[in-house]
Each structure stands twice: as structure tokens, then as C-alpha cells.
Image (cartoon, rainbow, N blue to C red; front, side, top):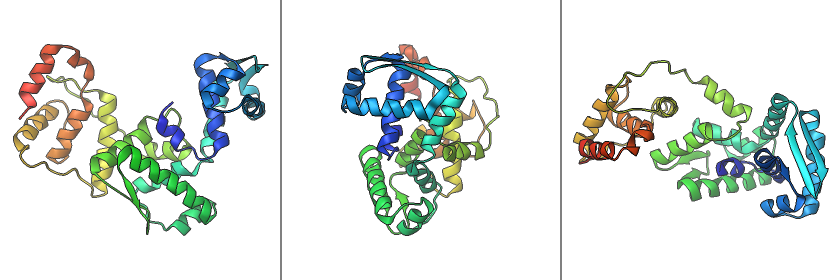
Length: 274
């Protein structure tokens, strides 16, 4: 599973359960010793977690055996997924991250009340989140009203990771994704192939940030190269974006398979290198 996914899970019980289930989904059969080694905990902890997992997921899974060998299988996959998602709906960091990206302005006290946490508990959760943002994205949060600050491309990378790479989304993120307009404009055959899924994902994020008043900066001295890239995007799809946004969208959406051909690699460099 995505490392960001586990970083956003604050409650250790939920994190342990999901990591155990991740191992079972991948391997189906594992010993208690192997699970304890994978999760860096004791076999007694694994036994306790598995007992609780069986109670919580009930008939949606079959988890048989003992510490010498557990066997996992799905009984009702839809019910199983809903129960996993319900665990995430208890996790405050997903909602906090979503609202930061939406530009919501709230004090620490207001956030503690909304998330039904004590000020001290919210402070611990926020410190964990700030560490994640600083270490992986070089972003930070302004204390007074909890505003996300940093380089615009880094903010968008965090957005993409949050909304489009997690193996399982809580309802708050699903609702955000569903709120975006569908992108049903077909792409036209062109010289350079774009991945339609990535094109749609990055277009959604770019449109959201543009609507919030956050555009990518224009890079000085790159105007000629940018113009050639914009022409390449316009050959494929028509979008009412500023030139620097079109150029970024084209580069982020390129179908990587076409570059398995070394001739295409050299052609790309010749066309778009300054």
C-alpha cells in the first residue's frame, strides 16, 4: 500500500489492522511470526489484533488457523471494503488534509472541536502531519489559520498523491473527487500520446487550483520551449488554461510507453529541449 496512506492513519490500532490485512491480501497464508516480523511487533500483539479483526469483519472474511499459520480469504468483498473504509472514516487526518487543500481557514481550537478532539490531541495529530509534509513534500502549515504553504508544484503533487494514489479512500475524499466535473472531452490523435487517466487527474487538480487563484509560475527564458509544448497539447485536447498550465499538463500526462523507443526519446529531446 501507499506509504502516504499509512502516514495519514493516526490511530495505531487501525494502522496495525490495515497492515495485517495488507499482508493477508497479498499472501493469503502467513504465520504469526512472519506477521510480527513484518510489522515489527510481538506475536502476542498479532494474536490480539487478529482476534479483534475477526470480530470486526465478521462474516465478510474467513480468517482461520493459529499463530503457526493463518489463512485469509474473502467471503463478501463488498462488505469487507465498506468495513475497511469505515475504519478510515474515523481517521481525522484525511479530513484535515482535504480541507487544507480546499483553502479552509480555521484555528487549531476550531479544528479540535470539528474533529471532536482535545486541543492536545489535535496538536499531536497536526505535528505528525506537518512532519509528513515537510519530509516528503517540503510544505508547511501556517499556524494561525492552518493554511498550506509551499511551492505550487509540490502542493499539486501532494494533491495527486492524496486523491489518486491511495489504495482505499475514506468518504470525505470520495465526495471531493465526485464533486469535480467529469472530463468527457475526447482526445484527438496526435504525434505525442497522452495517458487519458493521468490527463484527467492532473486537469482536475489544475482546474481546482486555478479556480482558487493559484497558478503555476511562468519560467523566464523558457518561453519558446513552452510554446512548442503548448502546441503539442493543443493538437490533442482543447483546454482554456494559461500556457504554463498547458505545458505542465502535457508533460505530466505523457504516455511513458512511447519512450521505450529510443528514437522517440531523441525526437522528444530535439523538439522540446532548449
